[in-house]
Image (cartoon, rainbow, N blue to C red; front, side, top):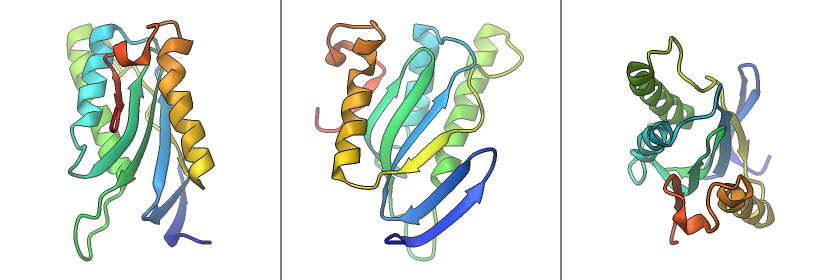
Length: 154
């Protein structure tokens, strides 16, 4: 493998990890999220930006969330597992949504699908796909109008 410190572990899905790579991560929602719920999830996921992870793009849609990011180097002999960052954000957002909705469970599934971005072509394809998703889902006419979308250097 061309990746540094490459590892595979498995939940329901296989998960590949390596140092100095860019990841694509997505997870589905159990039900469509309201505007307020999307905003809560977006803010919670975005909070570690610049501290633990560096987003290229993050988009929270009514029925799914997608993101592309790199894990930051946090120091010698310390390994940051990005799923800890993403899953903890989902737990926090889920608790806030449950509190306001009265539901019993968070409105999104626990496990996320993740993939190591293999090359520049795949990165560009993922970024363009995510960028266009609010328009494709007829939420806005221009992606820059969508509040739950972050694009680095946009």
